[in-house]
Length: 154
Image 1 (spheres, rainbow, N blue to C red):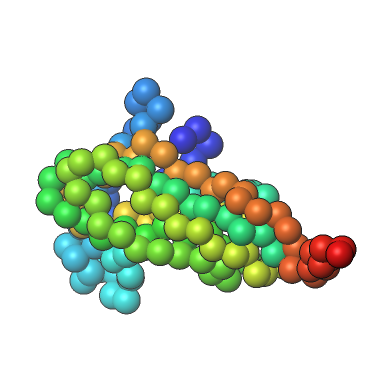
Image 2: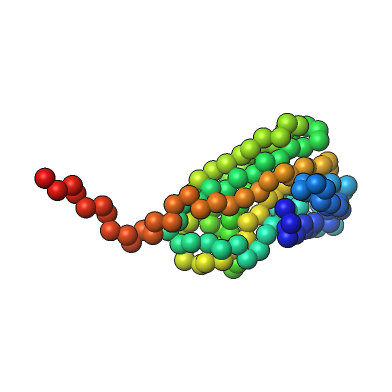
């Protein structure tokens, strides 16, 4: 997870550290605790890991994968791909528990921008999230304008 940034918004206090290839994000003051200071802040996006400048291929089928866990309880998080300008190209939500698990979704990138941001929104609840892997893989680069296969000759 080298090169990933961590953002704490909306009055959320916390820290992030990297250890043996893991990102460990710890939230000390939750978004709910900070709500009086920052009304309207989305708790889901209050804490996020993000990688900017990710190459994107219009028309490609991609796979977004996250392997992570929480140190206690259950936490709903969101993984997303967006353009540099902020338009969301794809996102999915899933629950993290105390056991490391791989969460994966395929999607077709239908936008024309060739660069974007991959984000993991871990929410603004107090506690720790341990992230082992975040990846965006190219599954198929066949552009939507490609000709269909020719019928077999008889």
